[in-house]
Amino acid sequence: MPPKQFQALVVSEEADKTFSRQLTSRSTADLPDYDVLIAVKYSSLNYKDALSASGNKGVTRRYPHTPGVDVAGVVEESRSPLFSSGDNVIVTSYDLGTKIPGGFGQYVKVPADWIVPCPAGLSLHESMIFGTAGFTAAQSVLKVIEHGVKPEDGRILVTGATGGVGSVSVSLLAHLGYRVTGVTGKVEEHAMLKRLGAESVIGRDEATDTSGRLLLKEKWAAVIDTVGGIILETGIRTTKYGGIVTCCGNVASPDLSTSVYPFILRGVSLAGIDSAACPMETRIKVWNKLAGEWKISLLGELAVDIKLSQLNSYIDMILKGKTKGRVVLDLNG
Ligand SMILES: NC(=O)c1ccc[n+]([C@@H]2O[C@H](COP(=O)([O-])OP(=O)(O)OC[C@H]3O[C@@H](n4cnc5c(N)ncnc54)[C@H](OP(=O)(O)O)[C@@H]3O)[C@@H](O)[C@H]2O)c1
Image (tube, rainbow, N blue to C red; front, side):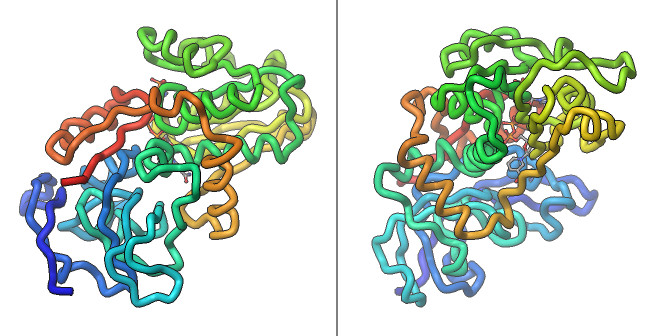
């Protein structure tokens, strides 16, 4: 097939070391030489994409670059026997959108072993309402369940509750019958979190303890933390005997200062969550759950749809913690 021109958001590093973002026409001939060419129908905006789009060298070293760690689209050409033209597919993470051009453009080329067939029961659009954030939420919830925490064990705390990972975690846990307390900095979004299924909502102050006490009153059967720093530290000190705290993010801080006491006196477990290098077997298991028994009835309520022309301003908003729920990028047409 002859090369095609397409629209992409390109982030460039300027001579003065600042970064700029432009909508640019690109050619499929310039994409890396991997086996599968995908026409991107939808992508989504994750916090990591905003870091890549603003020159964070911890996420993306080389510019010019097109971010977008999430892709849902249709295979257009394949040199792999695993996929054929017309297949509906999902690609999230690996090096997509960090080291190679990602979903903020209308075409991507990726290795076949990064691709998940879009499961029956989930549309391409719905898969991007979940996206990497939702997938990470599902991994966190799975960790809590596999740890043995049951709905009757008590409330689960979700931090960064209106964010992408947080809002999907709240919805999934409520869907599965757990009692959820959301932590948010957005007073105006308490009602939204309750609609998603949170039993109660508290402010960041209430989830932050600066007393220096090594153990605090036991409150949570589990904590799903998406922010790091003092809120994570407080979560660990308030988790009940035998409970689990999952840790996936660092929007508040990458720091974690804790004593060993929650672990050696209460048997609390701290579990790291990584979606980028998650093995394919787990990836398929999690996507199938999200398309099946974990499919949230209020899925549509979690997301706003935007076009490429609106992406720039949403990138600025997510960097300031001002978005809520999920932002789906519609690349059709
Ligand atoms: N490990 C992995 O594989 C993986 C995968 C996906 C995401 N992540 C990480 O998970 C985190 C969340 O990602 P996301 O896509 O959900 O981001 P997001 O949509 O921007 O949500 C983050 C939320 O955190 C809260 N927040 C922001 N600044 C804060 C601060 N200074 N202190 C406390 N809370 C703050 C806000 O919610 P409220 O206003 O409701 O408090 C915000 O909406 C990021 O660090 C991301 O890099 C990791």
